[in-house]
Length: 273
Length: 300
Image (cartoon, rainbow over all chains, first blue to last red; front, side, top):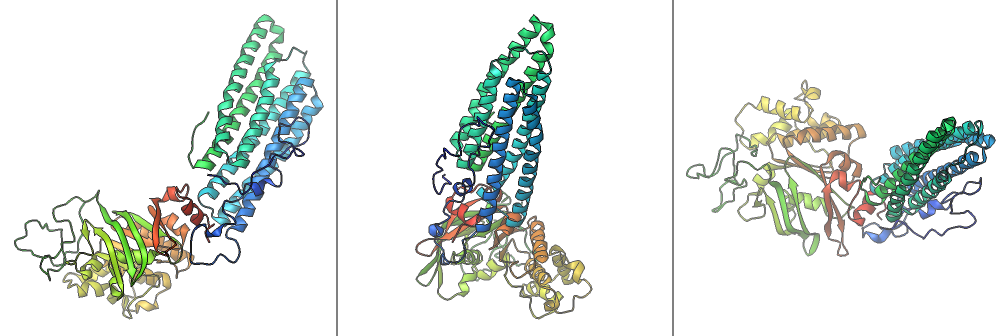
C-alpha cells in the first residue's frame, strides 16, 4: 500500500548519503512531511457518500501535527547521524575536543526527543487517531526513543575516544571504522524507509544488521589476540572492544526502527533481528 | 448455555410437543405451522451465532437501502455497526427485530436467521420477535408514566404474574439505575436526566427478558459522562445479553464493541458490508482501504 502522494525525490543539496561532514543531513527535511502525508488527501470521493466533498478537508489538523512530528523525528535521526560521525572521527583522530562536542550536543537530542514524545501524547489525546494514523504515531514515538538511546551510544563512544586519546596509542582495529560507517548508512536507510513507509527497505535494513554482528565478532577476536600478545595493551583493546560493542548495540536499535516501519506499513509486529 | 427466557411467557404447543424443553419458547401458535424461534432440540447454543444474515437486502419501495449483506452476530458479544450517514445502518439494525415491518413500503430479501430460524418466515410472529429482541432508541423515550410503570409495562402486557416489584427492581439494577431512583419510583420517568432516561429505557427493554438488545445511536443525545455510563452498562449487560449497536461515534464503537462491521454506500446508494472484524483489529489495522479511509477520517 503506497502512502505517497508524490514520490520523494532525493535532494542532492540536502544530501541523502551518510553524513560525511559535521552538518546535519536530514533524510527528509521540511518537505518530508509532505511526502509522508495521507493517501487520498485530495481524493475524498474515494468512498461514495451522501455528503458533497466540500468544506474543510477532514483531518487537516491531524495531518499537520503528524507532519511536524515526523519532521522532528527525522531531524532527530540527522542529529544522531552527525553525533555518530563525530564520535567516530574523534576516535580515529584522537580528538578529545570533538568528542567533547558530541557529549555537549547530546542535550539537543534529548530535548528534541522529549518534545516529540510530548507532541505525540498531545496528538493522541486531542485527535484520537485510528488505524494507520495511530500506528504512525506509535512508530514515531518508539523510533524517537530508539534514536535518543542511539545518541547515548554515540556519547559513550565519544567518552571512550577521550579515554583512548589519553592512553598510549595502539593500532585501530580496521573493523571499527567500517562498523561506524555501516551504522550510519543503516541509520540513514532506516530513516529513509520511515519517510517512504517502505516495508521492503525496512526489511533490508534489518537483514543488513548481520554484517555489523560479523564485524563485531571480528573486533572481539582481534581484541583478544592483542590482549594475549601484549598485556600492556589490555586497557586500550578493552576500550576499543567497548566501542565496537556500542556500535553493535546501536545497530540493533536501528533494526528496531526497521521493525517500526514494518508495523506502520503492515500493522504486524515482527521480530526482524 | 441456553437461551434465557422469561418464565411467564406462554409456551406454545405445550402438550404433545416432545421436542420442546422448558427453556424453549416459540411464537404464539396463532397459525398453523408456526415457527419456533428457538432451535427446539439444541440446549447448548454457545457456539451458534445469534444472528446469521444471508444475502440480506432491504428495500423501501423500489429503493434498495441495504444490499446483499451476510454476516453473523455472536452470542454475548457487542457488535457495532458503523458507517457514513445513509449507508443503511439503522435499516439493517431494524431488520433484526422486524421493526421495518411498520414501514408500509418496506420489504426484504435474503434471510435473517435468529438461532437458525429465519425471522421473515411467514409463521414468525413479529410481536414475539420484538419481545426477544428489544430495542433502545437514539432519543430516550420513556412513557409518560412513573418510573415503576415504565419498567412494569412490558411484563404486564405480556401477562407477567410474578412479583412485579422484584422484577422492576431487578431490571433497574441491571440497568444501573436502581440506586438513583429507588426512592422515587412513583415520579414520572420524564423527570429524570437524559442519561437516566436512557437507562430507564434499557431497564424497560430488559424487563421482558430479551435475548438481544438492539441500540440505535443510544448515546447521541447524551452528555459525555452519561455516554460513558451507558457504555460501561453495555459491557455489564453483555454478560447476559447479545448487543448490536449502531453508532456514528467511532470512538464509541472502538471502546465498547467486540466486533465491528463497517458499511458504506455503493454507487446505487445501497449500503453494503465492506469489512467486519474484531474491533481491536478493525481500528488498528483494517484490511480494506475503504475502512481505513473511514476510520481515519479521510472519508468525504
